[in-house]
Length: 438
Image (cartoon, rainbow, N blue to C red; front, side, top):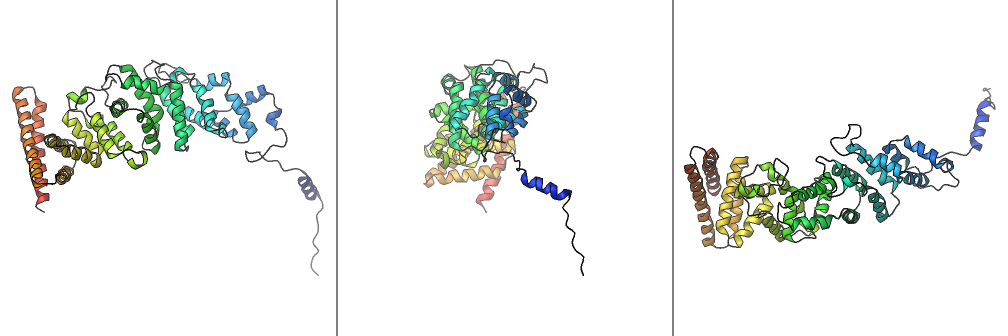
């Protein structure tokens, strides 16, 4: 016979009975209702605040996701003047002590805290609650802080990006409108872009830093950057849009002042114009989405490159190269169709010159000439275009040589320019003839 199994009615059976009769304890989440007051509800407010005082901003943000009731307690806590003074108001100035200096990570955590605490509120109420706190801090407002090197705008930008990450475009528009209301952004922008370039130096730089640090730079190379740019530009006529684009992304002088006259008087380095060119690419990367038409692109580029006066041709050529093939072709073809053949020819010579100086493939310039050549419908127009192109080569070479002759001992830059010009001419014609004779 097999062995009988021995049943155990000892300690283990007793524990199982206790566990069966004992209610299961769970953490109440937002998806569950609370049938009876929680531990937090029973605590005096002072004690609860003492507990929260011991937690970091990130830990409080995690705790706020436990239940609606805890979220309400935390919202009350972070709405207090004491917490605001301790956590939001920081010293943003370079002279501050190292331990008081705010970090990007701190404001990222603050953004996460407000994002989680206000998750169940309507967008309008969320923004009202949040911006009512930040609008009381002068360093976050336009033209309220005059201390050089203040880092408040950078911190505000990190906070805002963390807060609204994942929001749809309609909600982003509400954020922009709310931001404009508390900072008077549109009114201040109008006063700056309707003034003569370079007159309101401090206001121009303040506007540039605020828009770049708070709205644009945190979203670099992301679709949101196009949304913010569109919101900033669309209320204004094209002339003012060009003015504003230069303020936001134009080249700066060593002292930090916008180089309005520099783009007119002398050739700049490639890096000086990269920001403007990249912005044009962002705006017109997907024109069908935002209504940025080809005609509008041409108009803005034309206005931009005549602010405050027509740019030095080498700067214009370099800017078009940095903008890419589509923008370059649109500008050159439009000018050609309007009958400005001599202007187009001269600009193409400078494009060839920049290709040689900056190391671009000369085939790019050759392909562009071929595309512009096809714009003309008759053989006469095409011959006239090639004739102007060759005449421009000769004319610019002669101008450069005359400049050297006037300042033979001092003007080494013009002397170098002549060598580059002759070299670029040889490379261009070599490539051009090779393409034609294939």
